[in-house]
Structure formats: C-alpha cells, structure tokens
Image (cartoon, rainbow, N blue to C red; front, side, top):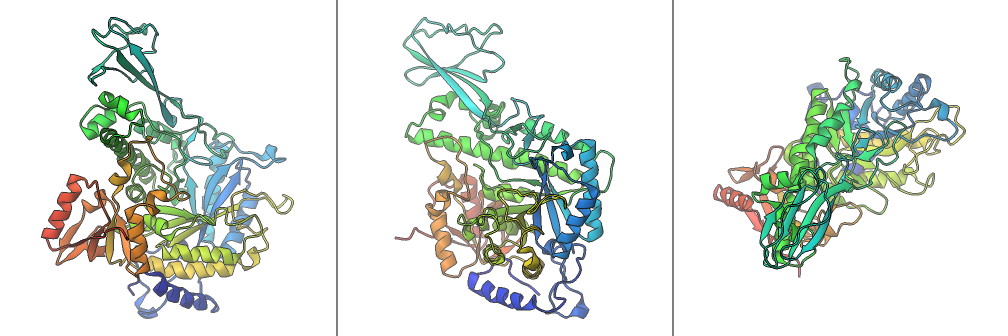
Length: 593
C-alpha cells in the first residue's frame, strides 16, 4: 500500500475521517510492537489493504518533565505504566527546575544517582514496550556549568578609535581578547594591526585621520532556560565547533560502562541562543568565503544601506549557517550515533538554512502552538525529511495550547490534524510532568505544557485521542513521500540585507516566509491543490534527472518551481541548467499581482 505522507488537505481530510471511524473499533490498536524497518509492509496474510501494525513510534509520545530529577523507582514505574495504558508510545525526558517543598528529593543532574535513575527508566520503559528519548542537557538549549565564557553563545564587541596622522593608540588593549585590529583610511584602505604582549600598538597613520576597529567578543548572557540543579550555566555557541566538542565530553559518563540502556534518540530544542560571533569566526569566514572579513569591518558593523554591505552581510550569514550545518550539529549527531542513539533536531528559530539543519538529524522536528500555527512553516521539517530520506518527522505538539486545564482533547485533535496535513508523522505531546503519588492534586506541573497527565480530567479519555493519532501515524509512517513539486527556497535573497547581523527565523514571526516570494508561491500552490516539498541549494546539488523525473535521496518529483529569485548562487544556477538539459521540468513562478 503506497500512501502519501504529504498530500493535499482535502484528500487527507477524507483519510483522517476514515481513520477516526477505524479507531472506534474494538481492539483497533494492538499491543505495542518493536519498530518495523523503514517502509515495512504488513504481513501478506493480512491482505494488501490491511492497516499497518502499530509500532512504538506510531503511537504519540510525550515530553516528560523531570522536576529537579526528583524521581524514584516506584513512581517511575507507576507513571510509565499509566502512560502505556493510555496508549502512549514513549517519553522524552527533560530535567528542569524543582518543585518547591520537595528539595530533599532533588537529584543532581548527571550525578551517579541521576544516571542510575535514567537507566532504571529505560529498562522499565523497555519492559512496558515504551521508548525513551533524552535532551542532551537540561532545560533548553544546549549549555550548562562546563561551558566557559569562551564557549558561551557570544556577541561581537567592537570599539573604534579615530587616529590623526602621527598619533598612536594610547589605550592598552588585551592581546588575549582582541581578535582583529584593523585601521581604515578615509579612502577605505585597510591595515591589519598587531597588539603587543604589553597591550600597545606600534603603528600610527602617516597621513589623514584613520579609524581603527578593535574586535572581540563577550558572552551574550543567555543561560540555559529552566535548568535543573546541576545543569545551570551559559548556553553553548553553535558557531564554535570546539565548544560543541568539549560540551559533549560532559555526557561521556552516561554511556561509559557500555550498557545497552540507551535512549532511542538524543534531542536538541529550538534555537533560542543569542549569538552572532565566535572565537574563530574570522578564520571560518575566510576559509568558506575566500576573503578576509577583517577588511570589511565598517560594512559588517554598521547598517550602511549599500549593496556592498548587503553582500558582506549575506556572506557573514551564510558562514554562520554553514558552521551549524557542516560542523557543530554534525558533531553532535556523529557523537550520538557512536553511542547507539538517533537524533531529533528542531532547526526553527535559527539564523541558518532550516532545510539543511533539519536534514542533518535523523528525525527533523517542528512545533506548533495555539495561535502561532502554520502548516506551510511546519512543512520545512517534513520537506527536509522527504528530500533527505528520513522516515520520521516529529513535532513538539501543544505548547501553550490554552490556559491550564481549559484545553480539551478536541483542541489537541485539531492541532494533530494540522500537523498531519503538513507532513508530520510522529507527534510528541508537550507534555507530561512526572509527579509522585504523594504530591497533592494536581501534582507537579510545568507551566508551558498541555498537562497530558493522569491528574488532568481529560486523561480518562486520552486513550481515544492516542488511538486516533496512532492510526493516522501508522498509515503515514508506512507510506512514502509522493509530492509532485520541489519549491526552491531562495534564502540568499533573505540574507542579502544591509541591516543587522544574524536574523533568527522563528515560527512566531513569519515575515521571513509569508512576506517573501517563497511564502506567496507556497500559498498559491497549496490553494490550487499542488503537492510540494521545499528544497535548498545544498539539496538541489544532490538532484539528478532520469526520464524527466527529478530524483532526490528520499523522493521523486515531477518539476522544480522557482519563486521570484534575485540572488541565485552560481552552483545552483549551473545545477538547474544541468537538470534542465537532462530533461527536468523547471518552472518560474512570478509573484501574484
């Protein structure tokens, strides 16, 4: 049975209605089974039109907040049993701050006792047929007590000096912190200067008044949000590969004894770092762009509304994106693989190319809130999965859906439908808070969650919603992407802007998409019933054409659609010409008038 994991909303609505009736049948969702291979089909004896057997990953999972990791074996077992009985497929552990009045139970993050509780949880979950995922850190985002000032998410610091002819700098500079010291003449000539060990600069202009730029960095001040005891500290700098390498050393003790009690996947939350610089950013820029950013500091550090400034800042933004896509996130993914774990990554919020960042991980993950909902934005995660050949597309599901205990299962069901329509096939509720049985009702709660827990009155009927989600996801995970079109994302048009430096692209403020040609083109295609996936420059580089079909690692499409594009990278232009010469259909969509 070949199904479409990203089909038009009308056809999928009919499918979901059929699924809703199917889950009402007695015994419609069987006991959890181990995850089947990618695209596995039901046994022949079941018939070609039988529903796929529901596996662990097909059931909805849930974020599982461990408040100060104040967990114990008896309550862990009770809670996991309740989740399994309600039809959940797994939990995602995130240690956070503690519950007041229970300080005596707090367990230090990554302490021997904490590791023991993690392994007990994984063993019990395995016994009950549940899976376990784990955040690589506490709270969000990556960071903690081992992250030094040099490794923390950082902001560039620049100081300028006006030097008339014959005058030297009188201020002493720190040679260990200054990353660039460059003098610029009134005509734009530049001279790179050196700070001596005693902090002086042995240079003065011979004519005219020159401007000297001293560049360094400082921690942004952004700390791990809602960190657990033992997890507090700076957020990491994702533009600095050495910071990621040293950060991952912190977790080696969790897997040091070779135990097979490992999470299914390790997780990285949405990009909420405050960062625009790194200790080796200048060297990384020169390596990738072929010129020295030091010579363009006046354009980089000002908002001069000029074409040269836009070009420099586009190169700067592309370099920041490259560092995450090519180095820091792959370091984490490779490390997880060496320890027998997959990865889930939320690329949204970052200033990089979402499509490439999502695709680095084994499971791209999007998220939807109550009002901040866009199926076309969520399609960035599913597009990355479809194009790269990833089986699962997950979603952080139900954050701030409504005020606590006013959310209904119907509210969640409508959100699930939007996610399924956008190509998601692995929902993860946000979420469930671990709570011991002796905590007074309503137990321990996390403020941003749907409260999908046994103490919420909706819990008595949650199994019906979970069965519905499992049926939908069983079908979606058993199918293959079959969209007709690839819609190119001209991100260089977005980057080509002389104002600011990095620009974080969020699911909350979507002008970067909805007010751009790609957003308008996506709306027109969606409204017309055309199925499509977004595609990036990197992804197009892997495309080939056979008999008119455009073959990507994970899908086959009939044509490539270009929205209005102003800045098309030369390698992409050449690739499109090669594909067209091989018989591929390429169409340009102009903006609607």
